[in-house]
Image (cartoon, rainbow, N blue to C red; front, side, top):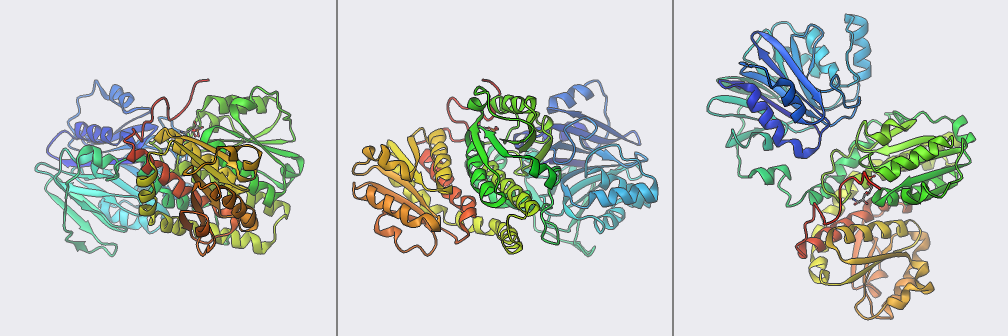
Length: 609
Ligand code: AGP
């Protein structure tokens, strides 16, 4: 999620904009910039990296401008560079914009602008299209140009704009990504979230989809999608800075768990065409490539590795290609059998995990094709891959990875289906129904999240337990490992995960009265076997918490607690069953008073051996 700040009024705009951008740093970003109406001209300063780089860049300047816009960029299209940083300007440099979102039809618009107006694009971003469109549509009134431009754009886009010929005006438009506006004593403001403006405003206007804000030093007007001026009731600001950064949630981890429906939707968006076909931007795998591969290696660490375990099941089931999985710290030292017939898939939220990066290099040196699934655009893993499949989870701040995991799974489902379709290893009916079910996941995830209270109550009863086991069969065993890791890393409770079928080969020796076992039993075709395992441990009077599909009538005969997820096909259950496991870890840690977002001994990105 990018950050937007803009203002027009009586005070020096650059100070207020930089101050506001700093308040948005928590959201994660990779570049920052500012545009000012300085001495009758649009002046743009922008730098890759931290806001401090931008501050260095402008430190010697004596700005006087009282109107301007600023931006912190979380790259989606175009790596993080000075050029790709916002603000972007029109060809003649007389209009500047900052944008948050994704222009889905930016390639078409870019071609039209190049062909019809001879526009020469300077960046790799989708956002520049907005500046160039406004540049060709501008006839002296910025809001009119905005009204015309938004009729041509598709996707999610909130943007702020300033124009050289209207020195005291600031215009902003909202579609899908958030926008707020407000009028202080001396200045008017816009921002992508109130965190940036708590210092200047005590009430704000929440701008809705299709609405436009036109601000001057003494006026703030809001227009409806059909162009009529509307009177909105302002919202009193009650949050402090810290609350605002977490969007009102007590911890980033809980916020990011709840962001999953939106993250899943955004990662799916634009990768399923209107015709229902999967289209993988940035992935150039052909049938010929697939026919050359005799295996796939999925290599990652921690949560990303657990996503890879799920990926093994779904790729082998759908695309019928053998898949090996390995933790990167092992892969890189076992002289693996990898060659030009191997497709190597690296999964990494940060794209900077050293073990994963070094494994990628090892595989590359051995001739493998490298595909990575990464959340941070332009990160090292992404840059060193032949193909990159970006998760659009947005910045993940909490050390415990949640929305990155579910969006990694979305990419793996899309990849598996894409390869299966190329190879003809699934029927059209299966392909179409899978695509339809994938689209239904965000709503089903919301339904699971609405039952958070049930998990919270369980945690209140169980938070003092010392050892908690996670078991499952098939794809559920992969989730067991992830559920166990989540619990360990935020609550510090010792936890152990195993394939349920392994219990009788040792771990069942640990079962005694009140031993707590989280049992995942979502796989229809393995249910009877899993039920038998739950009977075995129930016979030892363990405390079983069962995660099952809705409609399950048997689990309650062996489990003390039963949590149900909405019915869905077996292979998609990880997208839903992971949510109660994440919530369980969160609430157990909260009951124990641990530092949930920054657990002891852990870093968000492990860039060392
Ligand atoms: C997950 O909750 C942990 N923070 C950790 O296991 C993490 O998944 C692992 O370090 C890999 O990080 P990456 O996805 O950024 O490569």
